[in-house]
Image (cartoon, rainbow, N blue to C red; front, side, top):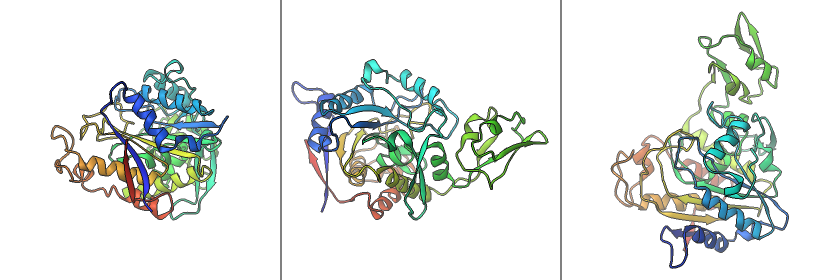
Length: 368
């Protein structure tokens, strides 16, 4: 049986605005079914790397917060710290970045709680025993929440072809160690040409796996827990990912991590995608390029796989902008993600997600 995906375009009706349309959309799609009175509701979104302007506007987030409160829920906004060294790699910088991008309490009317703690090591291990992931490291704030609302900026992505709901959940809610596992599964290494032997990595290594020997950091891989802490605290960038995994394997791990996040959220998760500012690259960049297609609309579903497929189809059915990063496939119906990244099979994460039981690629698009 096809899953329902509810969709609304960017044209406001008489007497309403786009926030009103968003509220109408999520209520029609059944957001109230996943929220009970006094539920602690995690609202997962990407706050945007400072300098990037493609992320979801706080105005939309404010309306979702108000809807959650109207059903008796207690919402908080959340994301987990980044693996790379940027302006969201620890909770202090992350919160400051969110505030700079407009996610203040006075605007969004909800607090922000970074899912994996101050340094990315506050996680809950979830056993899944899937093909590539056996135990997943999930940000504890989301794991311990009663319900989960996922707000996703749908866009292109340089590693997986596109970045949608699965990436927002699987990579976005994983702790730093979980992100490292998804990217490589191989841990970190020391670039000795950059290492100054300061000992910062050893000081913060939770596994006690790093020593300073002959003025250089040395990792004991028998003790390394793969948390990625050293990547972030190293002041010279001497700690690097040991070996990146293939795009297909990363996409499959993203799906399996999504499975882990949703494992204790049966009938308590709801998904919204904003198919606007469809930028070619991830919002983790400190800038954004022009969209690859016109703004399309907003979609919502209780089925993340159906939602992903519907959003991808809507983008592919749109005309592509020639003054963008698209190389080919500008016509409606042509594959825009292949036009961006010809060597990446963007369908891998959706296919694998369906295979492991996350949802159904067959969908009915309900326009409102």
